[in-house]
Image 1 (cartoon, rainbow, N blue to C red):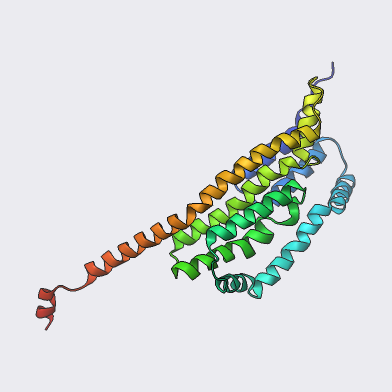
Image 2 (cartoon, one colour; image 1 turned 60 degrees about the vertical axis):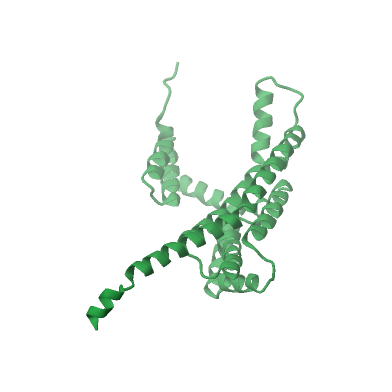
Length: 251
């Protein structure tokens, strides 16, 4: 019996250590790939050729590299400021309504397989979060930093939760196909990707209801935090005001 060669698994160790030490993810993954190729006996030229081929064939990666510069240019020329100003001009626009509408659209689009239609870097940061902040500023005035962080966190959560529960409905999604293959490999027959997608619909609806309920309570929470911030500032100002006795001595 041939001795089991564990050396090719060195790439996994590099990824674990690199991510744990919070090194650059691209550098960590590239290093892990190079070490794995060396461990399996690939020569340097073949290894570089493999990297180039996979990079060229990855359309998703290519589109990602094209999208980022476009977003950076838009932000440089005031995309976030224009989004805030546009929302501020809409009467009745609130943070909860904007986030709720985005959640519904995002979950429905993910269920149709349009997962890359939006996301954290291309939608949440440059558009959704500024719009939510603009609506809150229009209603409550200047916002404290911790309230801004709360609204930005809810904007990011809307995208994550909507995609997580919506994508399972799409029968061609990788996780659905993986579950289908796992069931068939273990002798569980009669279950198709369509069945998995249909059973994901009740979970997605439940996630929609729960998250919309959380967003409905967000406006009250924002108001409560702002009122508390104002009371704390008022208390500090009163504490710093000179007393009548101190004013007489100063005179």
